[in-house]
Image 1 (tube, rainbow, N blue to C red):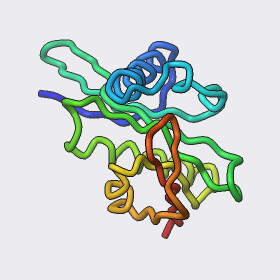
Image 2 (cartoon, rainbow, N blue to C red; image 1 turned 135 degrees about the vertical axis):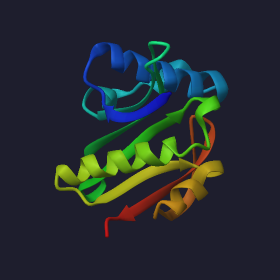
Image 3 (cartoon, rainbow, N blue to C red; image 1 turned 90 degrees about the vertical axis):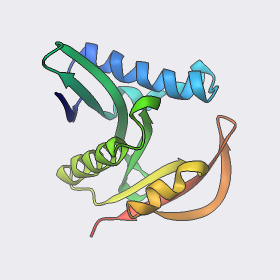
Length: 152
């Protein structure tokens, strides 16, 4: 039986696993240059991971990640680097990571969230209460749009 856990990154091993997911998704699949995938916010951001554990087989696998950091645009929490491994998409894991990051921001007293959504997944964020703000723009040669959500 497989069990999914969403949790904060707490160890160097978990951080490496989160980065591995990001590199598989953004660098491998989407051809983002490796040097653009890592940035200065990785050191100060709060990172979350989705871990699948199969107790019978003794397997533990990180299959998704995301991060949140503060001090950006009018004290909103900035959510980003949301990535889910291909075989685990469309199973609700991305939504659970997003909710976890929003909840984490709430514990820091922040109830406004912003993110740069790749246009092809903007409907995912809209379904979670995010609203498009402004025009589309290129980030790492991928079309994005700024989206914002105010906590209820």
